[in-house]
Image 1 (tube, rainbow, N blue to C red):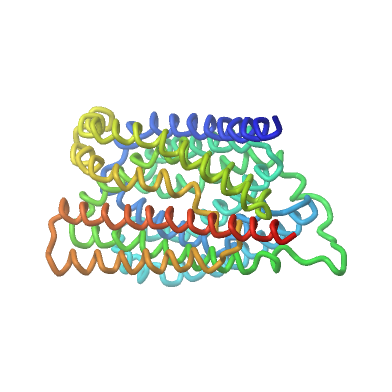
Image 2: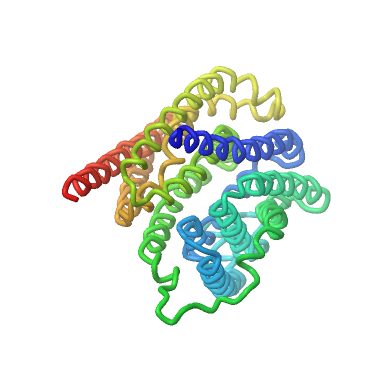
Length: 427
């Protein structure tokens, strides 16, 4: 009976989070036809490049400490951690803003940006807001407040679409501000429920261990992983822009923003709840193993039919929904659905190594990912691949890394479960 109640609450929380994600993505899907008619493919290409910069900054300015709220035991520790996150973010954000202002021309040239150069200074503040929104959301999930966590996704996506639509009337670079307004929307929803970490004293017992220090090793692993995965994700984007042009990059960017929608609908919800439950049972590897096995079956059950349908219908759906100028995006989506399915099944479970404190694992995986990306781009250059062939090679490389991650996560959990069983026998 206890196990049944536990499983029931697990899927209840997933349903709550998935409901918010689903409504948010519906808002996003309804907004895409509008934005795709207000902005040209080239402007989506610029947004994609800008997003690579924002997400890179988001991974270093708060040192990824916002991901450890779920592993804290009380509000006092959460206040302590939030204070550190905020200080880190402000200091590094100011430094990055000054650097972008001074070297904006050189950075724009390096990133192949021909428009929106003066707006690069918006990237650090956008990244800081993204990190703070994540901190508030992870803290809400720590407390089991999945309703407000889900609602924040709706607010964020609504702010994204509304800001993009309104700003199109005054600037062709409006898409560059959508990430900032999306983060503000999430923060606005979460702020009234985050008083426990904003207000109150951060005082602590003299012998207490700071959560910044306690989770420093995990944070270092996350930052190293983030830098590596950002470089490996951004490299193909810059390569496509330089070799195949911004028109093709715009089509590719639209597919990447839409074909992964099921991951935002279901996969992200499962991943967030799985991480919270896994953190609670980090010292019970046999429970963690059962949770992982149950979750992976559900991911496969949801993911396979969704992406089969996407692959069959995408050549018709993209031009119908987005307009005739997006015909090529529908063809690219047929190929990319294989990578999207691999990500859907693997990504929600990628924090197993953090929970088990195998902090070496994620950096090692992303070193391999970066090496695989380097081999891909070298082959594409040497063989002078056209874009269709490049896309096939890209999907094989991305899918292989995701599936390898899934296999290794399974191995780590089984290893931890065997150790736990051995320990119990010895006792």
